[in-house]
Length: 192
Ligand code: TMP
Ligand code: MG
Image (cartoon, rainbow, N blue to C red; front, side, top):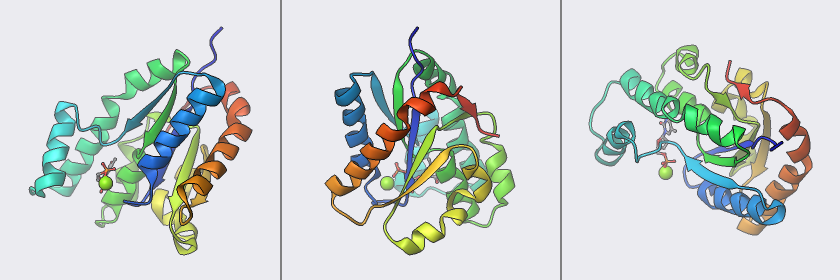
């Protein structure tokens, strides 16, 4: 029987090196284990909802904060079935931003964090989250980022991103290799 794929997530501030590390880990998994691996990113600007988000992000068109939040969240919900299909068919996914970005960016505008998170409840849950941090100060503020309650189930790894690309990816590969088999045995989780 095919084993399920893993859902690996990268979170962190803009320009911290997420896209580079997503690509690097995707290559590492494909090459070292010869397993199908796909990278995804949110927002996914290719869908109709994603195009609205893209317009907002590029032109800073005005939008109500909650309406914007719901669009970012919908952009994940519309990917839910394909994410589950990929995982169930044995494809690993390496994802650039997800629900924790959604909660952090909207809550930073002063909107209730529980309201923000409630939109995410029921989505597939990542198996492991690599939080790329540029400073140790950021790392200690991690609770403000995703919120402690969101860190309970998936395994959060705070990675010091203030190093060379290779140093960062070596650490990520090591953690991934160490956790891979035990994570694969767990059923796919759901955000609570
Ligand atoms: P990107 O640069 O990773 O494509 O993300 C675009 C911006 O959208 C970035 O500033 C983070 C923000 N964002 C949200 O505000 N909510 C979300 O749910 C996501 C996924 C991203
Ligand atoms: Mg960006």
